[in-house]
Length: 526
Ligand SMILES: NC(=O)C1=CN([C@@H]2O[C@H](COP(=O)(O)OP(=O)(O)OC[C@H]3O[C@@H](n4cnc5c(N)ncnc54)[C@H](O)[C@@H]3O)[C@@H](O)[C@H]2O)C=CC1
Ligand SMILES: O=C(O)CCC(=O)C(=O)O
Image (cartoon, rainbow, N blue to C red; front, side, top):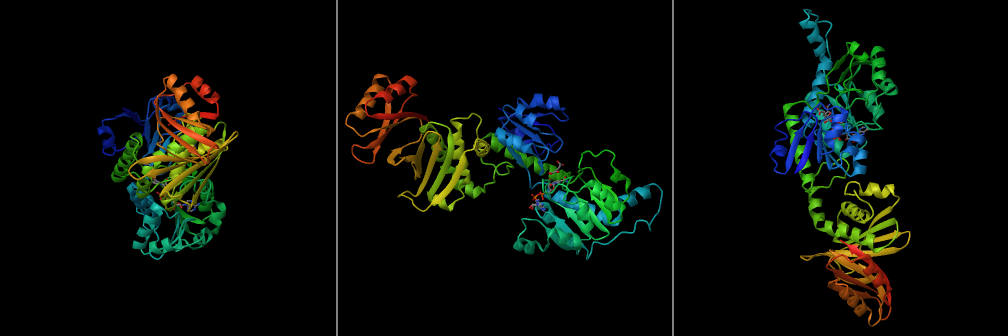
């Protein structure tokens, strides 16, 4: 039974799938203080949050069983993703479910800002009738500058077109084709600042975007510009904004998000040109249901070991690619496990070479499986999420390459490692209908199913050696299920690969290594 802890208010309809799942126990505990959260997380297999819960490294560390953290929404700045990655915890979000709601909110803020709606409302209900004071401006024929043309920025652009606005956009990942398709003019930031009557930001908060809109940026803008931030507090330098409004450079600002949330009493709130909402972008019935459904499904997939798509700390893999790579996953992981056990010493470098039909595919996920397999021999707690991170942390040099040399196989994966004591190579293939096979160790051709208990014996190709190995194992009650011998030339170096029915004890391994013509013995458990 998986325990899923929910610590922020989520839509009840949205989490129905979790509640109804036979293998899940849902524990809802909102408003926990940090100590209570540390106590609760200890027993949780997954944690589900919105933006209130601060999922710190300490919380992740305390989650001994934690496998997944789900964010019902987009921004994961309340989660220490690096800490989750190093602990091998998958972080998933729900990036699509609140796009429309947030775009609509940004647009509502834009209109409210242009027409002074909140200020006029407050004045009117206070008994005033100040029609002259609240004269606004039209959006029609004005230029809207969008910084960040992702999901939400794009939806805002569509709405701006409906209002007859010209749209200029800056996004480092915006291509000319996409700009054309959306109907926006691609601009540099400086061009956008120089042209825009309204600016709305829709980027994540990153090192690059923190205080992107700062004093220098305001100086480059048109006098009378109006600014909207429904993305993340901190993208706009609030102090610089305050100065720019006081100086008359900025005519108004609409803010849904703040550097500190909740912001408490903020000097910006004393300015009549500033309108605010308490981080309401995603607060619609629809968005909350959508994100809760999406993230609940992702959590179920992760806990059940099924494919999932919205991981923040894993590269996203299109479903068609996942389907094509799925049959190779066992092969990849067992090649990693095999090679790590086949060579003594600390791993320094690992090179993976793909050939045949695999050269057509994005094989990065398979390399990740191979690294996971290789590291799991030396490290506990290594998984698909943290494997590359752990390898990098230990200075293991990972290389992935592709070659057209198929050596007669329709697909071939070769893993080569260098340790401080040895170099070894193993190649495997996926045989149609028969599953994974190890087809080569170093330069010796063999044909072995990569599973169970294996003995890899390096020896001289001399009469009697196979018999001596068989006799020793027989007298020590170790049954040999299969044996393969590979050699390059008669009487030269050779390898023997045996599949045995049970683990072999260290003293038997030592006796095997003492046999005449036997050079080395490695036990491999797959
Ligand atoms: N107020 C609220 O309640 C909500 C806020 N958000 C926030 O809105 C923001 C946008 O969300 P989405 O559109 O879903 O994300 P997205 O990932 O689809 O789009 C973000 C875009 O920003 C661009 N970008 C990144 N760095 C940039 C830079 N330095 N300059 C210009 N563009 C840059 C990216 O290329 C990307 O196209 C996020 O910060 C998210 O957390 C999202 C939902 C609700
Ligand atoms: O959960 C919320 O309402 C916040 C939504 C948000 O900011 C996001 O999805 O990035």
